[in-house]
Image 1 (cartoon, rainbow, N blue to C red):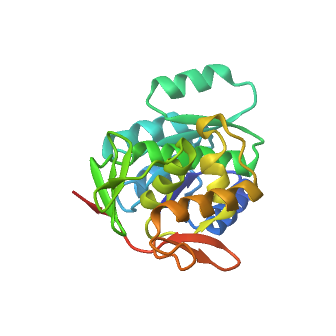
Image 2: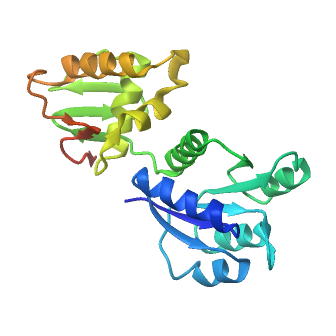
Length: 228
C-alpha cells in the first residue's frame, strides 16, 4: 500500500483528506505543524507528501526542503488561490506539483497518481502472465510473438503492471487514462478497452488470468510482474 504524508493544519481539510485518500486505497499519516512534520520525517515511511504552504509555526517550504533532504519522494504543495509567488518559490525549491485550494478531490487524486508514477523506477523489461513487456521499446510479446496494442491499450496494461498488489477501481483507471493518446475515456469505453486488451493478451479471454475482475469494485492484476 502506498502511503501519503499529509502536512495540513486545518482540521477539517486534514480530516477530509485522510478519509478520501484512505477510500482510494492509500495509507495516510498526518502532521498539523512544521515541527511535528519534521520530527516525523525519518520515523515514518511514505511515498508522497501533500504539504500546506502556510503552517501555524512555520512554512511548508521548510518541510519540503527537509523532505527532499532525507527522502527522494514527490512533494505536492497545497496553496491558497492566486498565491502565484508561493507556487513559483515552491517549484524552484524542488516541489513536484501544486494544487490550489479549494480543490476537486478527483483532480487531486489524479495529480497524486501522476507524481507517484513519475517517481517509480522504470524497468527495462517486465514479465507477467507469459507476456514480455519491453518498456524502452513499447513492445509487448507473448511467447515470442509481438502483440499489436493501441497506445491506450498499452497504457492500460502498464497501469496494471505498475500497481500489481492493488485493486484498481474503475474511477482510478479513468483518472489514469483520461489524457492518454488524446482519446476521451468514459466508464463505458473503459469496459470496451479492458475487453479488447484481454482478447489480445489472454489465452482464454472468457476466463482471464492476467487481468481479473473484482466484482463490484474494479480490476486487479492476476500475478506480480517480474523484472528482467
